[in-house]
Length: 252
Image (cartoon, rainbow, N blue to C red; front, side, top):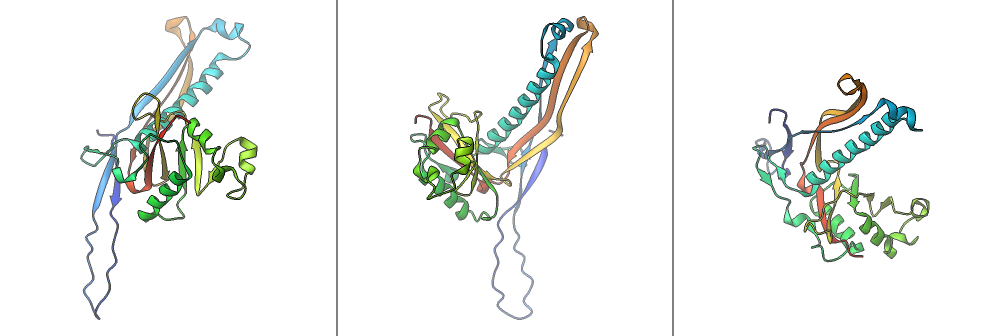
């Protein structure tokens, strides 16, 4: 784990009243702890024959390179999602389970207006700064359900211009909404899904080597073109208080 990265955590401080003149300077002994991310390398590659470039209308190498770049971004998204809703890791490498008090829903119902307000209530109870930017990551099925909620689509509750322009709500109830097909089913049968809301402070993303690509001819395979892409990164949930998991039904 020589490439592991430690993310420092500082517990909440508490101010005390000053009760006398020339009072001794207080020492709150605020507790430090840490989380640890361990990176891994993801890669993808393809081969195109010299004859392919002649026979195809498009350049296969360019298409491969674009496809590989998108694959790597999906791998990064998947790492962040896994870190957000799965076990975290402390500085000693021990597992830290997702706090039960930060979970909304049991997978029996799809997203509701109350789920969103309950999520906001949890952030408030955790003293998360109201000015912190927040995102809500949901599945396509939950996005469909969201569009069936009057509170989300009515002009009495919010501006509907984003809805009419793109077909889904980009910003609502203090959250930027992101639709992902990479969210996991906690039961594994696809009947439910773990969505989540978080601030920028919730996740630590370790980038050892950003996405890089090479397109070269390989003399060992008749000088065919090898297209390769890779990246080394890791993610970990650092601030439990700044992440809320919503376990929702995928049956709408």
